[in-house]
Amino acid sequence: MSFSCGMIGLPNSGKSTIFNALTALSVPCHPYPFCTIDPNVGVIPVPDERLAALAQILKPEKVTPTTIEFVDIAGLIKDAHKGEGLGNKFLSHIRNVDAIAHVVRCFAAENIPHVYSNIDPERDVEIVETEILISDLEIVEERLKKVERLAKVSKEKGEAEHDLLLKVKEALERGAFVDMKRYDENERPLIRSFNLIATKPVFYIANVDEDAWSNLPLPAVEGLAKRDRRRVVYICGKLEEDLSALPDEEKGSYMELYNMEKMSIGKVIRVGYETLELITFYTVVGKEMRAWTVPANTTCVKAAGKIHTDMEKGFIKADVINIDDFIRCGSEHTAKEKGLLRLEGRDYIVKDGDILHIRFN
Ligand SMILES: Nc1nc2c(ncn2[C@@H]2O[C@H](COP(=O)(O)OP(=O)(O)OP(=O)(O)O)[C@@H](O)[C@H]2O)c(=O)[nH]1
Ligand SMILES: [Mg+2]
Image (tube, rainbow, N blue to C red; front, side, top):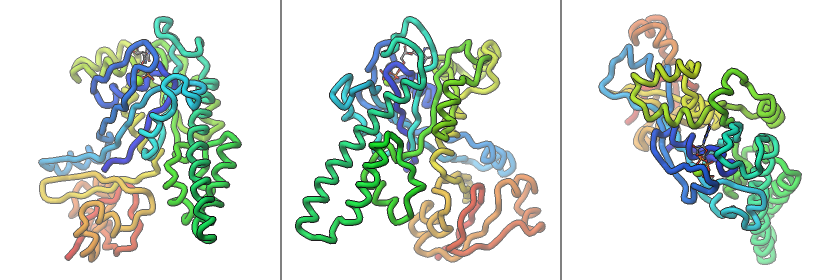
């Protein structure tokens, strides 16, 4: 199962357009608000230069990159919690994602109405996030009621949850996303079980005009990113959607025309991936080379379990070599000679870029 990013933003901010560019699919996006009603879901390979470099050396028959899922949902407007627009119930489609991509409209385009008439990233972000906070508050309040009812039957039951719900409620009422780092390791799983959106890490996707490239970065967006300590990826959604539909050999000349060195979709995927605080490890088994994703601080035995439950159950040891070392040495043999191949046990914390060879019973 892939880790996932839910896309939020105002209607007509370009969520579906960017989703299309990411997935090279074609879901409808039209210049009228609330074009998306049901969610669009796409699983996308994560671009990985190290994996490509390793493939150059080993030339395996099959290279499997790791993936990330993007979920494109309907747009939110002010007072969605009171039923404005499509309301806020559709947010349930992104309650289980791992991170949030907030698409912010920075392109003007007079023929595409902006729900609040003019371009104003700060105002738009505030509107969308306020609706998220209100929707989360509704959930927290419902759950508080339930826990309070339960407490009448058994005093201890639900006490910890009650305290935690109050803490989270207070944060939401302050108008801020919940900083999960402030909670300890025992509290986090319980908070996650509330399925709130405001506890997930966020990054911004600033959707800009084609002719805005030379004026980047945009001060209003940079201000938001700095204030919220979030990363930003600039993209010209429409242009990248069009480019993604072209054959590779034609892309280059168009990109030159627009002074683009690289498409931004790769960066969107990469930043989405990095926002999740994940690490990548690799396996080379038989004819297949493969990248895998696990959260940072995963033990070797758990990483083995990601590949196959039998590997976790019968785990003995793992041969470990860093992918950059391997690429630098050019072969496993040279890496071994230089002492770069290590034998690690079950509690070893897997590092980003480790190539693992699991020995198991
Ligand atoms: N000029 C320009 N138009 C864009 C850009 N990105 C999206 N659009 C257009 O804006 C309109 C709305 O885009 P969508 O991707 O449907 O917007 P959305 O955020 O998914 O909207 P809802 O589904 O209604 O919430 C479409 O006509 C797009 O072609 C852009 O970067 N520049
Ligand atoms: Mg849409």
